[in-house]
Length: 202
Image (cartoon, rainbow, N blue to C red; front, top):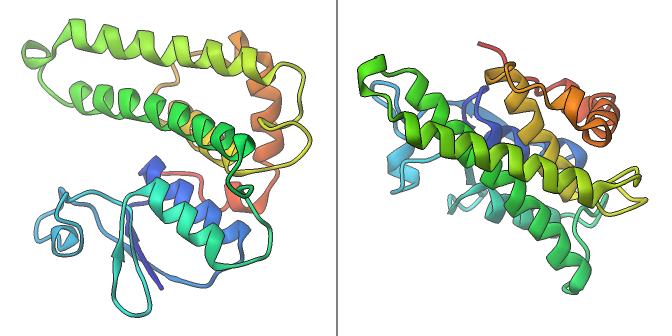
């Protein structure tokens, strides 16, 4: 298999972490949709990353579809339970984490514009979404070691990818100091090779 994506994309990082946790071999093709001559749109008409290319050349997108496929494709180190309420809760954590990323990535793109072109009200709304979501995560996590209780799952990978992106692009958001439960869990995640090996860099 091949994974198309960038080193800095948190959605790509989530897929890379799952691939590492599942011990699935793949070729990582580094490419960004916005780069000159990008071929991403040839594989994904949405022109978004990540894109997983299967052995039969079938393209799979986007990250929630990719990680669910990967978890089902190998029996080892299951990251999602069978269809049940628990599976819904894992997917809910993922949706929440991806929502944080959507807001953060939108604000990241806004920050690259000239000040006169930035939509301050939109940026403020996204900031509010991020903080409100972190508060919700902190309450839901409580004193549990992992999002789903005692076992590591896709929920933790999704949340960890979102928190890592905030550290990478938005150090002004001091979630470490305001959300001690998430901070403690993130420290544990960063001890895993899958997270250590995928830390984004410019």
